[in-house]
Image (tube, rainbow, N blue to C red):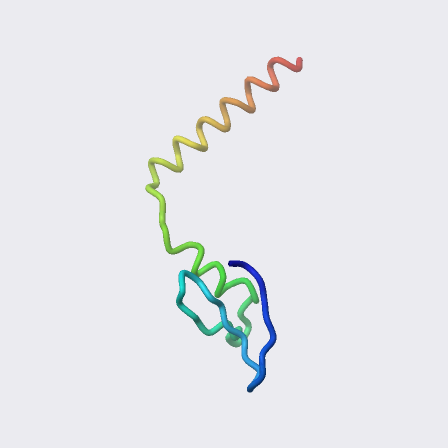
Length: 69
């Protein structure tokens, strides 16, 4: 579930991901999205898989450009 809620108690920033609650308080000079990125980026993809996707996207863009001209 994505959302936010307000409850009684001391103010705090937390992030709930996969049933686990993590501290969401930004560190000194840290962007607000950094804690979210740390959670989202836990599942790393294989470099080769990423390169294949980039190559496919480049080929599709080139084909579109050639069709348009």
